[in-house]
Length: 78
Image (cartoon, rainbow, N blue to C red; front, side, top):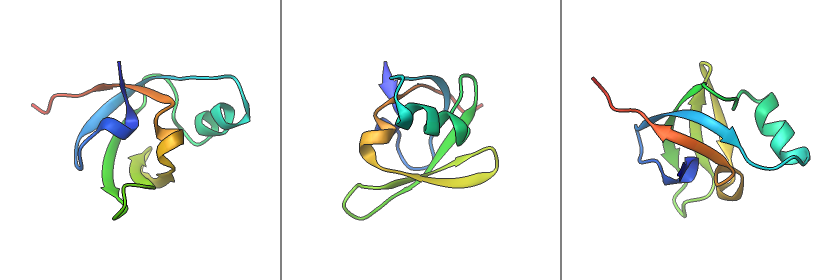
């Protein structure tokens, strides 16, 4: 399975799951990273951390370690 940190700039994906049951996993879900939600990778910082995504119409910055906890299914543009 792919994780959010494996997307390329401009690529879209659907969230399958946020792994873990700790406070970080709960916070990620509170920020909109829930099953079925579509996201788009906007940009990586120059050193690759953090990364910025579009979710539910707003920009969200995540550390690479947080993005690795979000399992995704990349979407194929039509």
